[in-house]
Length: 170
Image (tube, rainbow, N blue to C red; front, side, top):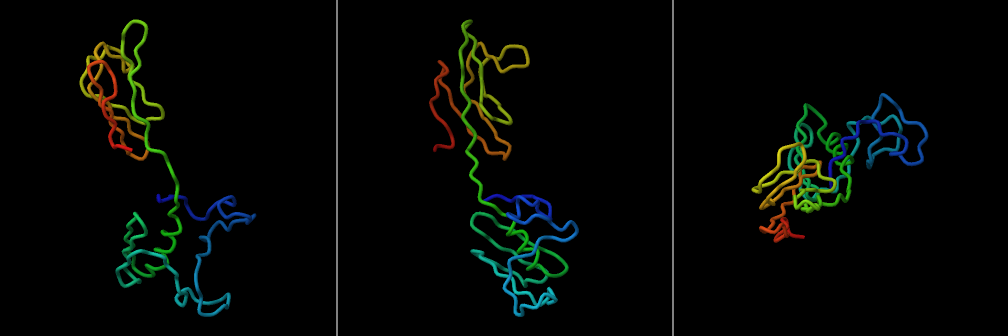
């Protein structure tokens, strides 16, 4: 699960079939209400949570864990409301781990370090040629590729540029 930092109110495509979204008011929360009256006070609203663990008084402080996500809501009043909104913003999204870097040898015998889709790429060892590209005369011992979420994949190379290990192992 990851936190989806979408500002309220959601766009119509996030709401499903709703055609118009109010601009000044956040979307309604999924709640169990004591009274079906439309004018009921928010103070009487009972929020339903599916947390694995929760601590706090629910008014000023609510700390909860939902799967692998832990969140603390610390406000002056109505922590349950803000916890429900925060929980609703958590979405399950599978994003593949960053691809490991690889070495490619060109026709002149130079080594080129590449990582498809990497946001950042670093290396350890090797003899790099001058210039903006990651071109080496001697291959690096290791390379690390990061994605936009800060996750990293490390690759170890032998002296011939052959992959000997990929960490984390999958």
